[in-house]
Length: 117
Image 1 (cartoon, rainbow, N blue to C red):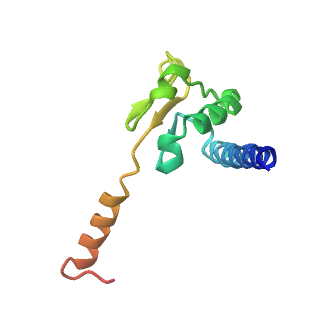
Image 2: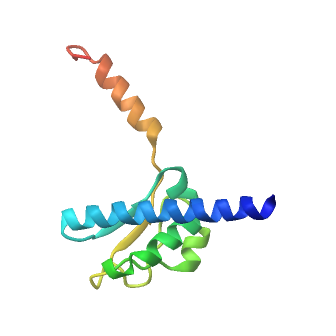
């Protein structure tokens, strides 16, 4: 019933955020820390709750967001908590992915004289 569906949705969101935090943590470890965290793509651009939950679990890396800015953010936006970036904190951005521009650039390269595609 509905209760089971709601529980499944909560679990799915928890698993998604866990995987996202794990991957950001692994990248931060490889890079020696974070200067900027960028949320992009469908979920990153439009799911304020995913951004909020992710940022909450990454505070140990210096990630802090402004809840009000996060709640109304549309690409391209800075949702960092006040002072982030200036004093060692991580800047947090919501950025449009612009896949159409990447695809167009790839097609242009493939069609350029002398290209090997």
